[in-house]
Length: 252
Image (tube, helix red, strand yellow):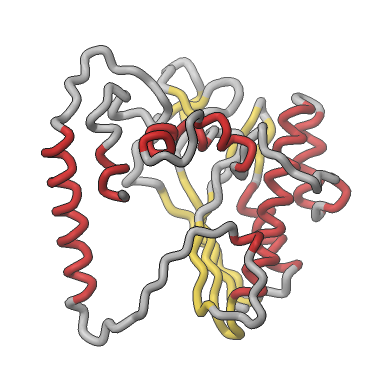
């Protein structure tokens, strides 16, 4: 299913160099069977390389669950690695519409917006700005001066990130590590420092030895410009950006 999902874009008329839904009228879609065989071959080779590593005998168990809904009796993970969404930049349900519909998860990808972190359409019971840490409050207050609805959406996002860090604390064993890959954004002139907010959450949850590394994104297809709303764009009249992300590692 993962291999099939990876072939959907090449086999459609979705613009190859765009992660957002955009039709390419000149694109010739790949043959589905050829694309699938090629993708499974790449994945098989990678898995065999992993299995051939000396001493590799890890028992792997795959679960599809919402981390906020897990109720662990004891910590069970030595390491948690995750990459939260870029708030204000993407509507993730839109980006993954091919996979979610073709794999039968939804009939209308818009249904996923209500449950997607970082979405303006996200349902959230807890959206009190005053419950955020000082970093989150400051960012949301600045956003409220230029776009109140967007400020509310970012509040929801920050609450979800805060809950994720708290839940990670319960999951990771003592002396274990949590690793977050996250990027900062800008919206209508307001700098949304997601990395700083996340670091603040880690400190509030008593994580220690926090280390932050900034790195340039080189292996992803990202457009080099942002429009007036801070979203990625191909329009060269927009603000040029150098896409970086932050790797934040903390010890429990």
